[in-house]
Amino acid sequence: MSHAPQSPPTEVAPGIRRLTGRVANFYLVEQSGGLTLVDAGTPGDWQLFLRTLDTLGRRLGDLDAVVLTHAHPDHVGFAERARREGPTSVWVHEDDAAVAQGAKLGKGDASLAKYLARTEFYRTFAGLSRGKAMKMIPIVEVSTFAGDEVLDVPGKPRAVHIPGHTPGNAVLFLESRRALLTGDTLVTRNPLTGRIGPQIQPSGFNRDTAQALASLSALEDLNAEIILPAHGDPWHGPVSQAVQLARAAGPS
Ligand SMILES: [Zn+2]
Image (tube, rainbow, N blue to C red):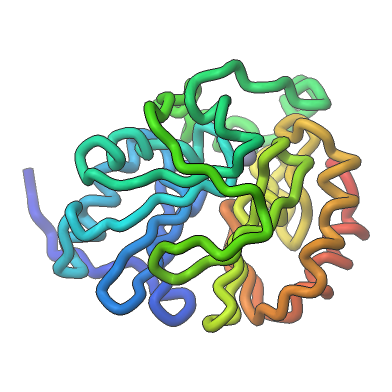
């Protein structure tokens, strides 16, 4: 095995690093020595996570918390392994807790068949398959939040409940850094069509697309300068403008 020198992943906002594994981005937030991981990639991204800690001169034991934006397999990823081996606590909104712990995932509100002509569909599913994220690894024990509350973990993210993509879907607002981690609430690259720009997730991945669009209004008052989504590149600018673009783009 070769050990090429590695550099830490890009710092996309003060103390926030973007890790891009096989499908979704996830983020490592640092505050006065503490570490919070926002989402946990796919199970196969575990090595990427360990390498990242290594390049930062940190260890698994330094991880204080994993906060999940929602309970989908490309976000829950290796959370159970981090919980067990850290050990660390894993946070999720109470309405997604049962699924994160192994209950059956609700169906999307459109068939995936409509995306079969898209190259991006195959790119995403190849990534899910290689990352062993076709199926969720249940988290044995979770801590829950109810939405609109500041979590007592490094970075002090404010969790805001934005139902639609999943029932317990949430964004995390890091107010002092003016950064909004949107998970799958608002993405900048569509994982089924490949379209670039602020938009909600495609209907094939949403529990309730109409609700996902309507819920975006809860983002408009968050005074962030950068949006860090789970799919696609960071987006710079007022959140209200990103929301407007996402509404204009509509369902896909
Ligand atoms: Zn999702």
